[in-house]
Image (cartoon, rainbow, N blue to C red; front, top):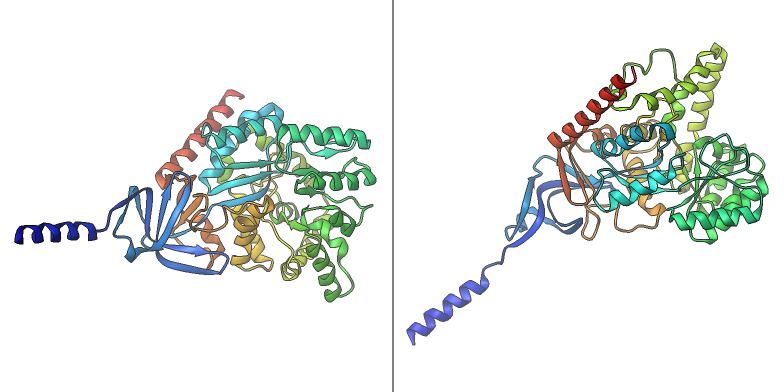
Length: 449
């Protein structure tokens, strides 16, 4: 009898022991940046399998969990990867230089980008597939493909239309390409067809992004299904005589479902440009020679401006930025995007989003509001619910930081590691990626001398 009792107690003791659960990645003792609630949740452990966060629990309860790979997050912070919601890939004669931007984005903490059209759309669509399948290193790509424009557009690569029949054919072709959203600009497209393009694109289920023609009312475009106004300057036309009336106009746009991508940085670069301001920037070392050369077209024009013109640029920019706090107050969605890429002078891919967030705070947003514009509103544009927070079920696109960006927005720069779809790129690896890009640029520049 005693023998059976001892055996029974042994079985009971074994069954009461906690089974060790093993995960692909365990990040322990880290502070979670809870952007939605503007707080840090201290001393948490994050458990990841494949590309998903499986569990998030307090560190003192994690004795029964281990990781094939483990990160000690003591004194560190973790947040979702950054979204740059307005970038451009372009320059058909230097596609290879655009390709180098993909790992550059990732190495600088940008895990998702929204490509707002260029002249190499088929290449971008191919890169999107290759990144999704793990064949290419780079951020998740969401692209409009070629944008809609009128006949004789000044921009290469556009789908040029001048009839409703051509509009339908263009949208059919974009559906075949499986683009993620529609981009429409106002260089040559007739206003009535522009409005029709917004309606038809929206009716097919796409989010719609646009520059705004002078001849059309913003409210009509919003009512037709416009999701985002690209660039802050276009919204100043609804500024009323009083701040209260302006706020009502913004609230009307909010209620119609229209948001805005301010792209403050490129406007700041232009407004405050002066000779020698950017030429020593170290980020230029990571950009190919042709891409850098594309910056010159705007700079050459600025060089000829009179002092009065320069002062007007500054005053116009500063007046425009006064709208930003009102837009935030109205509840309109603000999306953080930079216009980074070719042509847009000294608007550096990957680095620009950090500076854009800083500009947002400079001109009236809190760090929490600026971060929301990037990592929460970015995925919401595509109705994606698997991003935007460090919580169970979310995609494991994450930044581990040495300092808290809710206290100082510049702390988004303090990157210790990037996690992309569950894969860890520590600081040494990120440095190596950047060195390889810089070496590639050096070789390219030598080859054309």
